[in-house]
Length: 175
Image (cartoon, rainbow, N blue to C red; front, side):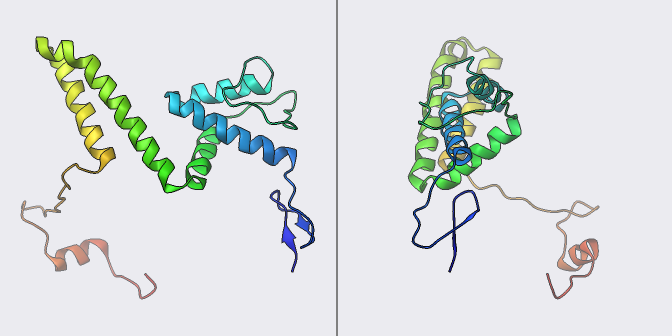
């Protein structure tokens, strides 16, 4: 049975897996995007920074592994950065997701701490922002109360099963 290299080409079963420069560059981009996202940058700013590193105009946060090269006109879009971030998160073990949750919680604590002077003075905008920070913290940590959603009809009363089936139409066997 033929096995594949990480870039999709076939290799002999007895041949070692070899990472191509394209795969190395993609792995570095994932690591760099993850590092920049941990700092709190938006994907626009991350794409600009990674593009600047690819053109040798900026220093990377994650060291470039040997053999990683960039084409002279290298750029990356914010969508590609988002895809890289999603691949990084999917590849990381569940512990990394827990680390991101802790990181977000720490950021929220810092934000709430910085809002304290305004909250103590009764500034409505600070209070509103503080409530949003607390709500976000509760959501990411999973201790927010579950929300109940109820569909109502035109008369304001809950929908019956018959009304719901009439509204969505017939259901086929395949669904």
